[in-house]
Length: 541
Image (cartoon, rainbow, N blue to C red; front, side, top):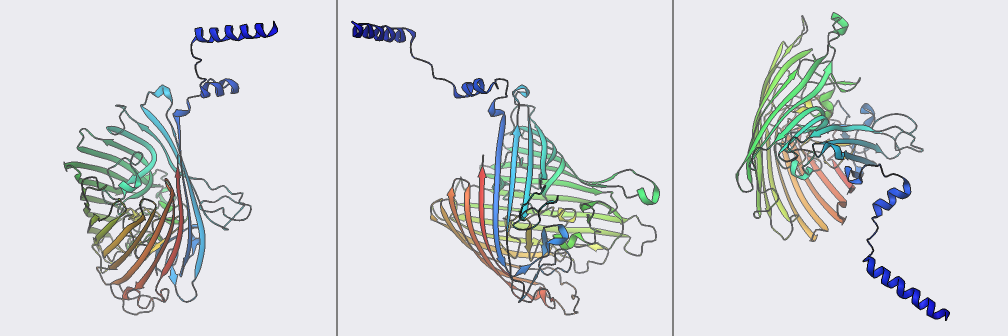
């Protein structure tokens, strides 16, 4: 009898279940909120987190002194100022350094896709260097216990049409590039191939940018970058007003045919700080009259006191098939003219009263995808930047980049070299024979070739390359009085990259530089530079 009742109960339960229909699945998110009593929390989709982690190991015969910039070594090889990058029989040097950059985006539902807030920070340090203190670019020592959180970007993006690619307004601290693309929506790999390839402007700053594409073929960018501020008249004239250095940007590009765009730029830099603004607060002044900046960035110092001035830029650039979507050939290039004048504001100055500026730079790159993947590529690239044979006179005929104001302010990323131009996969050590395209004001003519092959498609890639460079003006003799030539040297390099997982890569990089007669008489460069690098890169989101 008992078994009959059990069977009847089972039948009733089954009939009830059938009558109710299928049981709806439980929403894990609702279940989590109910259990945690967090039903008022914003949806998780309103937040977005991106993480960039980079680790580099270096073994080289280049020795730089990072003490001047508190953990950072910058500058051209052999320069007597800056980080004093030298090479010789007793300069074998090895170190590990790492970088972490988190990016946080917040778009609350109530703004209805009209705005996004972004915060981006940076933590850099060398392993074993500094602990139990508060400094940027350090904190890898035993115990660590260090505050090292550098502000990289803090901005708000407004999208009045709710279509970011149509109209975007960026306000606050953000990336400023000499590329027309929105840096918050464009991969870095595309930015470094377009525009002026960060040869003139490539860093973070505070200001505003507007990216507007009125049609699918036409793109525009307008921007205002506040480079620096100072109170140059406070001490002597009791005038506490701030004076600014700022850069106005106007760019446009048009797709003249599928995959081919032509761009034009008109920029104006105005500096009223009288040389009193800092590129490194309290330590290194910014501007062309700075006595210390050029040693770190590879620019030329003007022989002028407390200057104010204006520099105008006019440029053209072209890109064809940058992603190999329309064939095996790709190309890019630019031409940039910079002209302006700086005038001293110091009464009875014994140095120059004014310096006139007129320089031109040009770049061309050809690429051929010879294999099955986008990484099977052969490249040929040339760079020209006019030079100045007499840096002490009142006429400067070289390239004028943002390295005149930043540490650094421009980083030509697309060159595929490791020593002739600095290896761009870096943290706190950014050194090479030519750190700025102006080449300390003496100008640059350079050629670069490379060939890459996916040994295992999209997994293991090998690259070999070479670069050669020369100055366009003969530099004056060094401190030893020995005459110097123009030839910078020849680099040979090789790289092997293993893509372990999506956006996770391990690399092995090696380079050797046969130094030229540009270094004759320079007792800081008594051996040919070489370097071995290992890298680990991981993007996560």
